[in-house]
Amino acid sequence: MFNFHFTDLGTKIVDKLGLSYHSVQELNSMIDTELSGHSCFQRHVLNIGDEKLEFFCRDVLECI
Image (cartoon, rainbow, N blue to C red; front, top):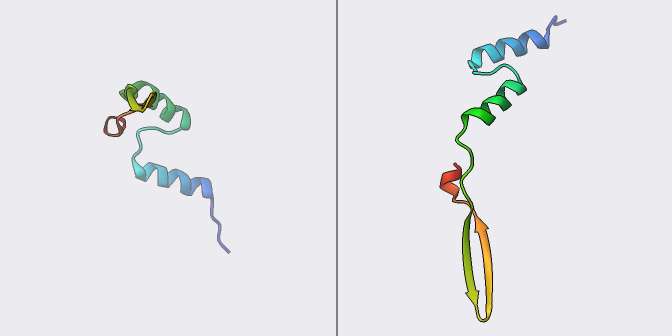
């Protein structure tokens, strides 16, 4: 029989990963305050015959 505590194992794994956060709340806080934000939308107009179609998108490289 194994006498195994998953919480102890989980704690050891998290410690070995060397993460800079210890909870979901800390991770969300880091995302909200430390990331540069999102890129602006770009507007593109496509003329087809008598119609004007507007497309809005973001630059994929800026998003990455």
